[in-house]
Length: 316
Ligand code: FAQ
Image 1: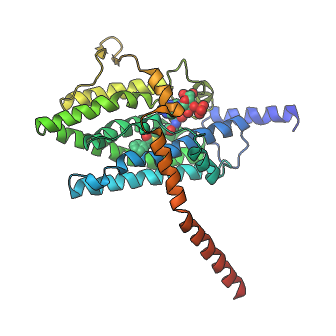
Image 2: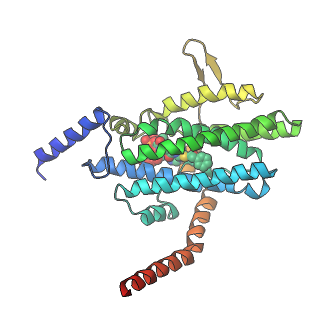
């Protein structure tokens, strides 16, 4: 393609974005836009799928039938989110199996938060409240993402995440007003999940290598720090309401700005977890790899059945 033709295509593309016209799969798009979307959406899909593991760990130990039914539904919702998102990467030309193999080989990233263990039932509350709470904060703006299939997938995902957040908060609220042991369990879960939840928003703006371009393309609508601040502002009063303490001695409300100021995030811990050295990275990836190996016979049987059916149809 000639340089000037390419420049016109790029101008038209950016004009669409500037005018809030969605980009659809068959539209022309710069390679880097396509690659950024495949990177972000596939990491998002992997996060939903790996994210089933920490909660799946507690399905057999839910304290009663209602809690078990709710947790089962939530974990199944996360599987659904992963599937929409893998489909969205396919609309960009990515091969689903290759994408999944990248997760299994350790090449692809997924959210750092899922590399922390779930040690008590209260962690189901903390994950719903904080992890789904952070996910919603990040994903509601993605409903306005410039790429149509991703934006539309986010609408349904966010509705389901809202239910997840509410059920998590309800678990925490119940434990916080229960026995002293139950309240201590809720506080311990908040202590362990608070900082990793803040890390979910990604590196701070000065360190974030993709934000500037992704904002220009309207893939991201807010920076990592803006969303992190919104999350802190919304969540701290919720903790206060149920009588729990956010584990940050530097946390204070700034009357002038109307925002909470919070302490320094341990970025060294964050990058260690992202690089694969978190408490559960190996366990999580091994579990996903094993699931694929264990399901091989089902895929082989389905392929053989489909081939047989096709032959029968051709013969008739
Ligand atoms: N963990 O330049 P940036 C959920 C990587 S869904 C691991 O700022 P970007 C639902 C980043 O990929 C949770 N890696 O990157 C649920 C990049 O590496 P790369 C997931 C991280 O893309 C709830 C590098 O650092 N949500 O929880 C993390 O502009 C309960 C530089 O970073 C999404 O994926 C991290 N926390 O901004 C499920 C939402 N942060 O690719 C089960 C969509 C950054 O160059 C139970 N994604 N990195 O090798 C996004 O909004 C963005 O991709 C960000 C990162 C904000 C995550």
